[in-house]
Length: 131
Image (cartoon, rainbow, N blue to C red; front, side, top):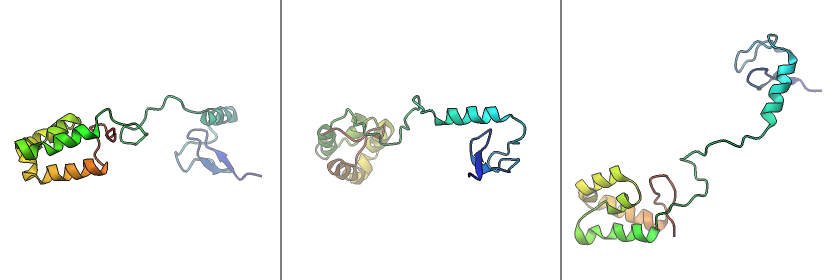
């Protein structure tokens, strides 16, 4: 025998004898038991239209090439124009800052180079680079 039931408003597990839900504060006597059954049926149905979290790694890979980003990251040490790899991967703001600060005197560009080689560098949408 169960000692809990679902809240008629939020669906949280609450004691059977609870008159007010401790989670949402809904009065359990206000609405008929039929609505609680409807809520339970709706809660058990799968949700198909959820939007993915852009910050969550869902296995998507960037359309930007790791090799191209690596070449663009090494190039500034030859032509002294830093931040090109950031423009390529969609990080426009950081690319401008690197361009104006000579890649943080080359240190920031070196850190990006290490991240690209190790596979930790991501595009502007948070996806790992292809390749």
